[in-house]
Figure (spheres, rainbow, N blue to C red):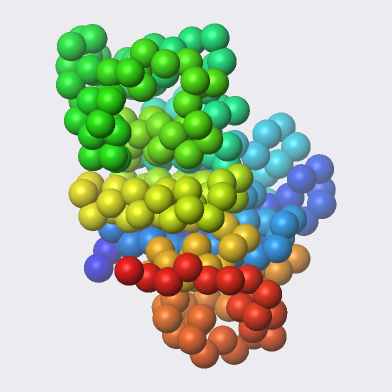
Length: 260
């Protein structure tokens, strides 16, 4: 199958400090790749680099990040802006903090959609209601009319998934989407992200420190430590017969969610 996203010997630095060292992996259409490791190992830095979200201090200092024939670090901010949303969607660790607290969910989703394509309010409402329904919301109109603080943490995270999927991107980048949630809500978010893949054929690049979440979702896994990849391959193989001592350490320390 043709590659959708490819990291090729990527180094990433902040103010000259090397945070990610020589990392390579591929993501195919409809595939879920999990990136797991301890806090500070470079997981979030990897996915932020694809969208140009490293800030003024961060930059890709070596290697390439290829997406549909385009090397993302070489693109201008304007070119990346065209891709971010319609092609590359992001779910942040705490979706609630990414929403403006004084504007309704509907107003913010509508602004996101019209930033990239011309659409009427009626067309937006149809699309948003359909998407919220697929993500398990039976009261989509109430959700769109709500302010972020009126929704629970789990609902905010599910709305964050809806916001990222509104423009039907080919790749969904998820940065610790379950870490701020309790176990029961984690399971619900995992199930809904799997539903996104099943319904839309979306490829997902999932960052997590909980190897149990990775085991429940991912087709392939990349294990990172101190900015480097220590193990990479099929999830069942890596988690079932880990070769790296660090992977075995993660498995022994973290409870896993079972696949359905």
